[in-house]
Image (cartoon, rainbow, N blue to C red):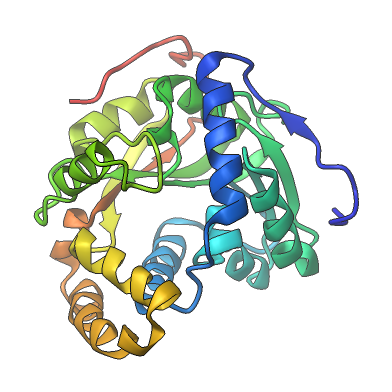
Length: 286
């Protein structure tokens, strides 16, 4: 898609959808790039490992991402997937994020659409692989988003669904709660899940969960400090980057820590036979 073309749009027209769009449009237009920060490089390594471990070879497969924040501001994981031969597709509610992601993915003919993950503008069973990391927790009705993700996944396709870890050993959910109470958290509504709750959420529409894992084993405050230094106090970046490296080393060398990252993820497959799909089912995380 040319970045000069009008951006196609689809969204749920309810109060939640309008509020989310307004919030993320503002964030997308004003938030600085996090690319190049030490913890962002660590984040990318975690995402790349997820793709290499749980997705089949990417060549000629349509890889759909449920937001385009990484491509516009963060790890550019879809760009990497495009370099492996994938056909990248993504949606986001913020037009500025979609425009920037479109520029990043232009060499791979990436399709980027302004859309609400709860109302995807794609036909049933059109996506080979789904990657959703840090998206559905920003909606009250995350279960609607999960049904849409399931709907567009091809039978036999694989999805990786990631959300904040309620049992993060570094207590990131409490940090987020405190920051939100003082109006200092930049990412709006965000709920956290246990692995059991996430599994129930992913299985509700009909997915079969095959593995549980996580990324970013690092204190939330350290990730935030690294990004603050990267965007505002670059001269302080080196000592903070040195603090990030041990956690990246542990993630690489000690697989047991991965399930304790501040983002947890379920890897799931859409069954080839969909007769028993529970598309209308609802579940609530614990």
